[in-house]
Amino acid sequence: MIEVKGLSRKFGPVWALRDLSFAVAEGEVVGFLGPNGAGKTTTMRILTGSLAPTAGQARVAGFDILDRPLEVRRRIGFMPEHAALHPDQSVRGYLDFVAEVKGVPPNQRPQRLGWVLERTGLTGVAGKLVGNLSHGFRKRACLAQALVGDPDVLILDEPTSGLDPHQIVEIRELIRSFRGKRTVLFSSHILSEVGAVCQRVLILNGGRLVGQNGSEGVDAADLARIPAGKPRVVLSWDGNREAVEAALRGVTGVDDILLTETGAEVLIAGNPVEIRPKLVESVVNAGGLLQNIQDKGPSLEDLFLRLTGADIPHSGEPGKGPAGVEP
Ligand SMILES: Nc1ncnc2c1ncn2[C@@H]1O[C@H](COP(=O)(O)OP(=O)(O)OP(=O)(O)O)[C@@H](O)[C@H]1O
Ligand SMILES: [Mg+2]
Image 1 (cartoon, helix red, strand yellow):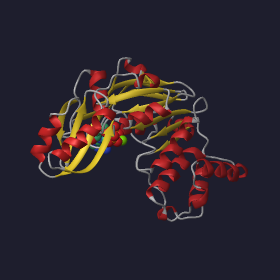
Image 2 (tube, helix red, strand yellow; image 1 turned 45 degrees about the horizontal axis):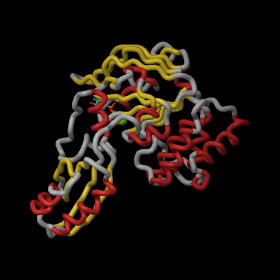
Image 3 (spheres, protein in one colour; image 1 turned 60 degrees about the horizontal axis):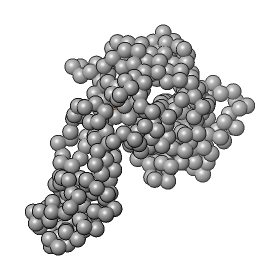
């Protein structure tokens, strides 16, 4: 349904995409994973006709994106990263307008809008002005406009970013429900999200696909089995930094410590559940006042390291992956 061959895009001196090739079969839900600047949005903008490639080809539903852009657009629902919505329209009015543009026959529109409003949780705010919606609801409106045309192909650029946990679960469920029915490519920074929602994962880094299977991507079920590094516990405390750090280093099972602005990120060699109480104890014994303690999974960065054998750019901040990357 989506076929990408040797796609490249240059911005000034920077190659945002380099010789990217992959395919997505009909009815497949595929995750697009990668750190900031990996080229996810660039790929999606090219597929949806809002950006021209520097080189390479892509076909959507059998139509070449450059030769038959209108045919391609007709079959795609696109949820961009930053949507330009009309603030002065009501949610229903806006979606009705999109339905008209997408060629939904007038007699089918009320039913289609009802379905879309219901599935995206917008029924209760259908009469509100788009400009008065909260961030999360604006995001839903953006997803709703992608669905209105009942497209075969959905391209969703970070559909869950900035949503509250409840909304995230709902949107993930919605995307999951498209398996076997629509072809979906959706981007995310969040490893667990991609694993939970999609069947296959394409991992992008520096404009190229990485992973053992090359352009085939990684089977989502395998993501969980990839040894992705050590679990981490993030601590913050008030009080003597050096004394607490020394005490933490002395705890059995602590592999390494990365100091952060307010505390430390502790890499654990064993089971975090067993080691956590010992960490708390050592902070207190060293005269620190514990503010926060949090378990974190292995970082996405670790996964990249395992998959590529190469490093990815750091934000320069200790204890953190590339800016914005969530574990
Ligand atoms: N319009 C533009 N002009 C110049 N450079 C751009 C433009 N759009 C993207 N880039 C560059 O292309 C590269 C890929 O960016 P892209 O937005 O595709 O990444 P991304 O994977 O979507 O990242 P994020 O996770 O932050 O959304 C980056 O180096 C970015 O700075
Ligand atoms: Mg992006």
